[in-house]
Image (cartoon, rainbow, N blue to C red; front, side, top):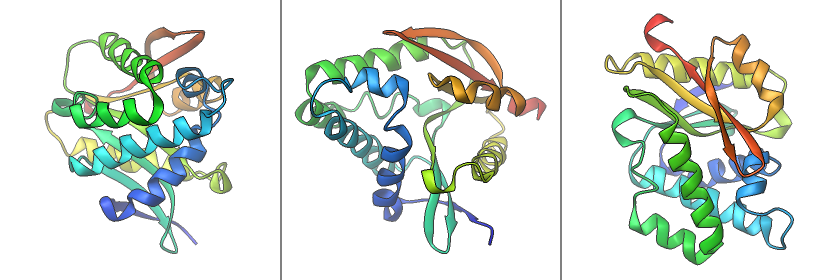
Length: 204
């Protein structure tokens, strides 16, 4: 049975939080940002995912998901070009982060975002701040179908020049390259090498 593509809203926030927490639990960038070697890592990661997802839906930013028998199995949060800083610039989001994950983790996450955005060339790019497939459904081409749906959605915006995604997980590098993503460059996030990829919507 194939999964259905849906534009998500706040009614899916809880499922999205759970799925993305599982997807990013062992991500190299997030394990560094939120200090996986220190007690409380899972709580800090869960709180960060909750703050990001809730703020994303509160600001009515777009999100696309795959639903299988009404179960969310994959999700992509999309940041339009004109709203890439909308969440992390929010004083409410920063306050929630400070109270739930602490000053150090909040500062590292904000620096990561600034470094990432500073590495991009000028232009109207969509970004994928969070993207994940439920671990039980990985390796079944759901991620590829989700990306195609995101590409189609971004193409509907005549102002968009493309889509940017970044990853510090080496297992995904060849995956993105094979799907038409060009590597813009690399940035250092502590000991992690973050690869920044671009998908040119205009030429797709």
